[in-house]
Image (cartoon, rainbow, N blue to C red):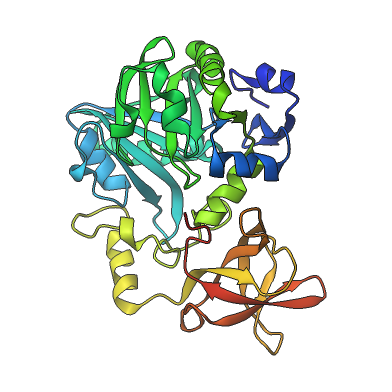
Length: 361
């Protein structure tokens, strides 16, 4: 198991530590519901330093990114970020990621922790033709997600940048918590606003300490991975390994909005055919009509008890106090308002397909 630069800090804070994506990570401190509510109503801090970071640089950088990613990175200007995915050759997804344009010819790719080696090898394979400069800087960098509606106010004293002026999916390279150059990115995985701070491992303890000093009057708390999952699911954000993987179609997963056929990219020809022919299945969101907690792998069944799909993510929503989830069903049964059932052990619990997000501000 790898550790982040803050592992000992989490242990000192009494975090429950679990193995996750090859790292020892804090899953909770005070309990998932308390931590979830802290982010929805105040401000909380996640150590997500297990995430991977690649630098793609030089005159060929954009060409490589355009080849391996689904979104149109030519639209990025310096200071902007973009959600995208890496398509594979068979119609599935290698990973989802965020692309940052840091300088004219420098891009930062942020990938999922469990996929660092796989993503690096996949991109490198296509780079043999292109010849961009690639650096895997994952082991040297840390990432803190400071999330919640009070994040701007709580963190403003730590930087000379006006945090309220950084728009969603924009970022600044600026001073923060006494460190001269960090990336302050208006991104996150919670739907409650806030920032993600990229810094060197040697800087993250100082930043962590100052963040908690600055946020003390705002009820700031450390938040674990369990609440990160409930928060992202309430927004309907896909989780790699659950809702999307090497075998899931990005179009069936609802990622058509970041699939830009204005350029050629890996498997774009086949994905365009799939779009034109129409998808067979769709990833839908559902709420349970009765008590119960849906879990990944549970069957979605019709009124006759026949399996028509599978739950990919599910939980008891702390904000809504009801069971929510996502899963794939046939496209002709995917309309909002459609009644389905979730097989929870021996009981088929009725549920309704709903429009995302589950949690609305």
